[in-house]
Length: 340
Image 1: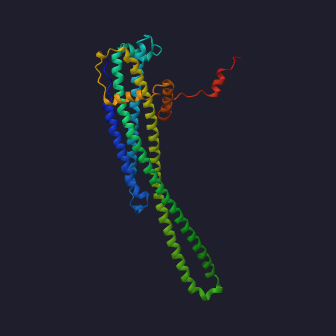
Image 2: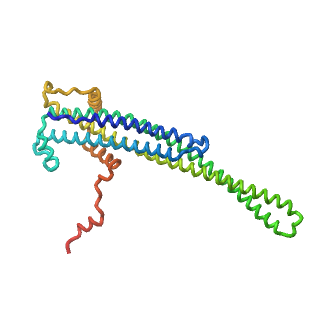
Image 3: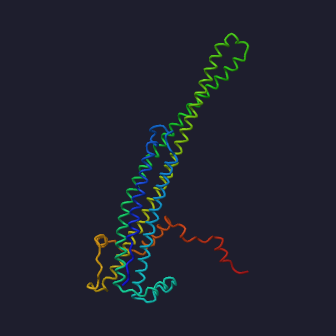
């Protein structure tokens, strides 16, 4: 009897990491939210601390995704092995075309149907727990994404107002500069010597106003730079959350089809097993998966094609480096060149 692989440790770790990721993301957004809405002075923003909060959230989200990815792949490998063992019940040469599979088969020896069923039950139990995790993760990540996007919109609006304010100050400064230039020319002209005293006062007032406008522009530019830094933080977090949601969608889509594959395999094995010899007690979660399969008239339909599709989407989204590289046109044409 094969010992079913236990996924309890990885599932517990994935649950804890997901909770930490959502908590870290929420904490980072709560801290940044007031700044994004323009509340208070931008001078109080402690960027090193807040950048560290966002970085911690991103790193925890990536750890969650990595753990979930490993679980999906490990469960898929368990199912592939169970499928191979099922095929070996009818064809002892099944899998011999792959040397690595052959070594594993010879090391483990042939499995009885009861042992294969026990492994599938264990895999379905872990699948049910992982499916629940995905159902928790998707709405939580979507909520964080919407909140983050809303805060990002507020930060962008605040920066836009600063852009308008800077443009207005610059227009006023240009107008004052024109007045200063005209007055300077007037002061240098001997024809207006009788009004020099009054013009000197006007000139000093214009220079004072010009200095005030320059100071105001520097303050606004400094605040704009800080607001842009906040926007950059939010854009990075929004991008990560968007990728996380897409990853969960791809993993959940694959898991759903993989569950169908496991249940179909289980049903193919069950008729050949004596019910009294089965010692497996299925959890309510696994029974619910099987009942949902039975209630769905399309469950198991065109399973091989759908499995290939979700596997491709899964690899393209999460493991693009594992996709086959298409041959270059030049290389293909060289191969077909006749020998000369």
